[in-house]
Figure (cartoon, rainbow, N blue to C red):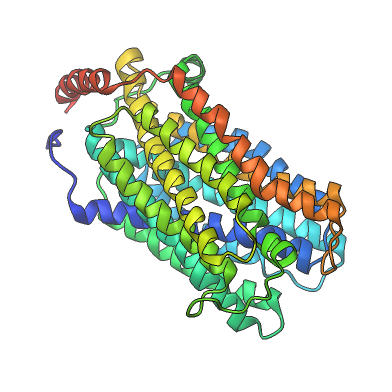
Amino acid sequence: MAVDQSAKVRFREKFGYGVGDLASALYINFFNFFLLYYFVDLAGLAPAAVGLMLFLTKLMDAVTDPVMGIVSDRTRTRWGRYRPYLLWGAVPLGVTGALIFAAPELSKTGLLVWAYVTYALTMIAFTVVFVPYSGLLGAISPSARERTSVAAYRMVFSALATVAVGALGTTMVREISQGDESYGIMVTMFCIAGVAVFSIWWTFATTTERVPAAKENGNIKGDLAVLIRTPDWIAVAIAAMLVPVAIAARAGTGLFFFKYVVGDDGTPVFLFFDRVALFFTALAVGQVTGVVSGNLLQRRFEKAHLLVVAGTIKVSSIFLFYLVPLDSVWLQTATQLLVGLGFGVMMVLAYSMFTDIAEYLEWKSGRQMTALVISASIFAIKTGVAVGGAVPAFLLGMSGFTAGAEQSESAVAGINIAFALVPAVVIIPAGLAMLFYKLDHGTIAKIERELASRRAAIT
């Protein structure tokens, strides 16, 4: 039976697709907030060693992400091309993620090996699930507007995960720890892993692939050659790499900033929120606002232009946060909310741009390579997250950081550079890259019309 190419995606399905990103964002945010702190401040590993681990795993992703995209594009099952991997990959992702923070008593060398192995396995499982999950966005509807709407649900759940980790996660760690933060982090991660498995299965059960698969795909070398010669993809990939650098660097340095620069002792300042929880919750609330705003504004304005405006808001807000007095809790919170606003707009537009580019390449070349386009783009995002996590580690090592001690002026400067200067500076070239993105509303509408005719013939 032919699939209705014009049917709208129902709320239940948009909601179900969005729930899947709860798993992704819970993992990414928890790792951003606690991974460096767990292994450096609590376990005593050298910051540079952990930073190198984060960097090397991204070299592995340079192979695994595109390979997974190629494999899922060519998968044919009764569940579709992309959905089967959500069913099969959820449990391995849950188990490997939980193991990272469940290390037995080991020497520092043994603990570093444990960190390398468990984190690498988690990133492989992450690729197996979330490259097809992102490819599913391109197959869930032939309409760019519908896909942007679905992507907005994804970003809302991403923001909710930030709230969950920033507010509930930090509170759980504090309350469960009872003097042993490592134990509190481990138990909290176990809970996150369980939620992640459930949310991935929910997405599998509630979504449908509407865009029909091509009877056969072109050769892999040809697909890659087409992709890397596309200026629009290169522009979005650069932006998609640099934007997460800013967020990951701030998140990875946040605990260090509040503990060693602000002098915060974890005392709640509003209800059960301490300074750290309030900081990350403000980011998430701003992100939700940005996602909703970006989804509405992209109907009237070009995505590339909106992304530049959002980047300007984000950079300005990061600089403003740095200038605010350290004891101005609510002024800091307000500026951090603006950082989240810019981030939310940028990410919802970036994800919708990925699928627009996949449609453009199918229209231009006849090659159906949705997951490859998105996997290569996700690799850019993961690279940005890794660089954003590694840069603070290297800066801490270079500036003379000493875990659990009063920090020298150079160590405090290193924390501030990682927390404020690096996140602000890297956004600027992301905005400049948008000058090379040419897929405007008129072009996308033409592509949709012509692809609809081709797909009708296939079905």
